[in-house]
Length: 115
Length: 115
Image 1 (tube, chains in turn orange, cyan):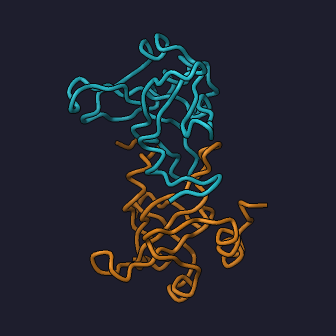
Image 2 (cartoon, one colour):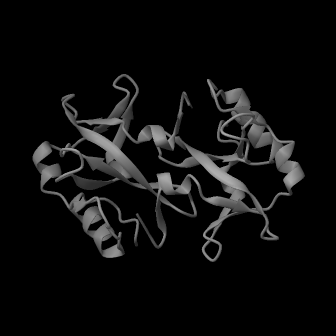
């Protein structure tokens, strides 16, 4: 269920993420929203793993993502290495903290959600 | 996966919606986001139905929802009747249009996303 500028949140999940050269980096596994404003704060990207084993989630500040209609996906202006070295967490029993959020914002030089 | 002010988009889905008197009105079936800004624009509420048969989806401008930590859900300041008479659509093969969005915004007197 999508039209023009709107997209169902559960369709964002699964959307591919590319670098500016058009190489596929991964996909959006899920999105973290601010409960009150409904604003997307982090897109949590996944890069493979096998049947969930060894899978790591890499949060990206939402502001790093640009939607590209022609690709039908998001473009991030980051190379693969920068993403691989970025803050990441395992999928199970993870408790999101402000400290972790700040480390993500700082790594990408994004204006912090937590300020 | 949630902490403090953040919530995973797929956890918003399923969150109960109450009126100010604390009566349960329904639940958030899904959320429509602006693809570019990541802002939640509509919360699509569901009110029952049976195994998907006869189920109707009622979009609400996100601004109508207030998160209530003590309830663990959203409060909307609308009576049940006003919700029942509101713009609604069936779940299958629905194509969201600007016209439909405008009718929703107008019904609730919300500032229109489409302006």
